[in-house]
Amino acid sequence: MKVLANTNELSREQWLELRKTGIGGSDAGTILGVNPYSSPYALWASKTGLVEDTFKGNAATDWGNRLERTVAEAFAQETNKAVVEWPVMLQGEKPWQLANVDFFIVDKPEWNGVVTTVEDIGDLRIEAILECKTTGIVGRGNARAWENNGVPTSYFWQGAHYSLVTGVHTVFFACLIGSVGLVIRERNYEQETLGQLLEAEANFWELIQKKSAPDLTGADAEFEVLKALYPESTGTSVEVSEWILDRLADYRQAKAELDEAEAKVKAARVELEAAIADADEATYQGRTLFTYKSNKCSAKFDDKRFREEYPELYNQYLVERQGARVLRLKGE
Image (tube, rainbow, N blue to C red; front, top):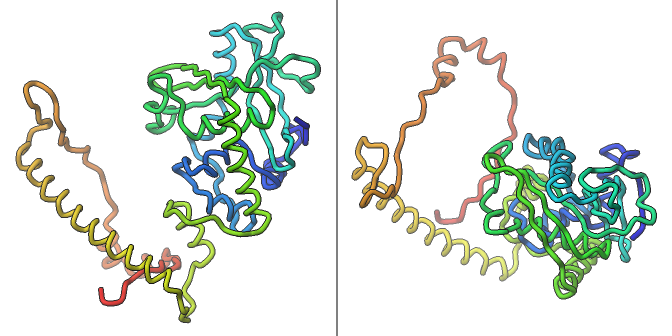
């Protein structure tokens, strides 16, 4: 592996630009289609510059960054391993293979139980990679994915990517879970797994180089990309292919099946609500089946009343909002 840059010397903007030059660990799960927050097409659109990545982080990612070192220190103390922070951007055998590894575990007995920051990993023998995560610190999180020695699928492939770039085949995941504490998982990546990932990433990078879009999957992120590309209709008409006629038929059929399913859901739900009446929970032989509890009362601004009683003041605070595009099928 090769050091491309010291990340401590880069601004966030510079770091993001460097990431665009290749595939990073957080991209692996997306490329394989297991990231619920993105898709291959959405990632491709960002990497090719078709759209800008507007995600600036949120409370969950902010606290994840804040607690990263803390989680590493807890791991070091609990396992008595020598943990090293090496803040660099790494490059693998392929120019597009990039990695920002959280921490490395090294063979340095005098550092056991602590986290040490180094400018150069030098001649230290790397034993494993350490990835530090948090969940349920802000929001509900995904604690269930860590149960029974599990690792969330996107994280698993992130670890595989780092293994592919560095040649280090053992990855530890340490996750601080709200109301649970620290859990530690170990994964050892076989050549078959790494080969599968390498092929998928190489094919994806070829699509980027050729500016040839991957297939759409219907992920929410793809609708956001299309919304950014085509925010307004232009009053024109486009002639489509027979392939689109088939997709339209698929859409009509799926929509009809969805309407039928929603009707069944409503019919079943009304029976449940009638059965529970004004109780909080419904039980069967002492076991809770479902609950139907009232939320706390809340206050809501009466927009209509304010507009009617203070029309001039109301108009002072109006701001123009872009109209949404609506998909309507002919004949509906």
